[in-house]
Length: 553
Image (cartoon, rainbow, N blue to C red; front, top):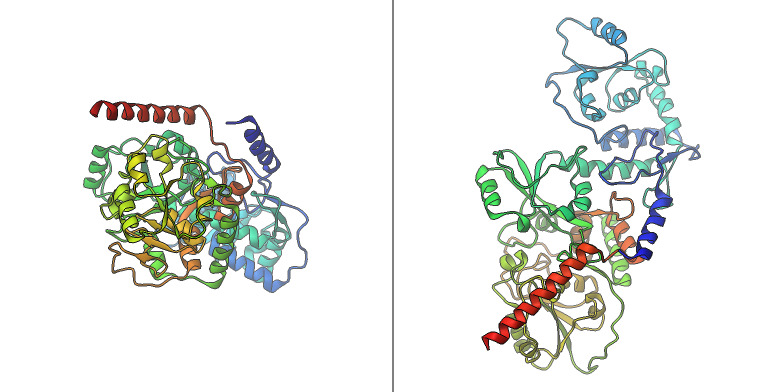
């Protein structure tokens, strides 16, 4: 890591770092994240009763406030009395006042921290210390409260709506600072951000193990798979059984381990790199800042449906989501972002009077090529493009992992230039996209990036973006893809609804707009001892391959 780049990140992180977490709405302690100032005094004071009611109702829908990332222990199926009282004597007195045989849950027996919204959901009554925010949460959830002692929530005993408003109003006039920058949020906006984190946490709660995750990936993947406790990374799960949910990075999982998991009947949840990955190569051990977590299949395998395919097929795509997608696409294009970071403009001149086609190479043993690539090698793809466009100026860009010497799919330069007019090695994919007229791809994500820039795309395999009316498709697109989507709908599904993103500064899960902003403005670290070692390994592989080729001649 270069010293200047490190200092740039640390300086930005330092401005966001503090430890005030005393408010009702809290930033969950995601693994590796930096504590951030959230709630403070000085917010709005002109909140009328109707707005208070709307905010409280929304708060109950989102189920945020308190330690909402906490454990969710089993509670009785029948209505029960929840007892949350400090002090042995006070607690014993409260329990003695209950009818004989009454089902009870005492929080002293629950793991700490626990999810307060979970433990109140089945309660018929909550006996709570009058100064504890659990009284506020129970009342917001519609559970009658019996406060014990004196405190700020004593007035909630009657369940009166005005008392609930009075209890909430001091919280609602707080101001909040977004942990991702200096943006000031009101209570409602802060609650929505907490709801975003809560939905992510809840989606991970059933994951019993995570297999196939390289150690260098875990730091950035852990916050995105976190469910309130340590992410259960494993090298194997010998005791997996039907009903378990195991997150799997299949390409990095031993074949025997994967076979045992499949035989066990456990549900396998596929995890892969997202479409805005980082500013470096996975082969160089640059960890991803975006992942996809797919419970139905995986986006690049057209043999079965995936969560992304279902999103694109079924929607819905409300107008506010499409507006976000349009704005995100504009920022991506203007900043020159691609899967592996940002790039500048092309310095090379190409013939202005010839149709320019970019053909991106792919790793030939990559799962996306093996499952959706229609059996095409890079050379065969290039040959087919030349046959279809004999007069075009064809640019061939080898995949960066192949250029780094790590993966399969290299075309010898002499053979490549017999079909292509130019081999693009040093220019970024985003820079080349600006100067070509169209793309011809197998399953490459470059085709999606070209669509974002409104370039025509012809597909020979079956990438996730084929079959929706936006591409010319020569591959066997599944007939189940019946919907016709706009570019903004495709963008919304593929970038807003499907992946998960991590802010490299705060190490907090974030919306894609935050990561796009970071990658477009920060020179994110691209080097280090591990990366340099991987590149040296790639160079050695290329030299060995060259020697073998000479010997074979």
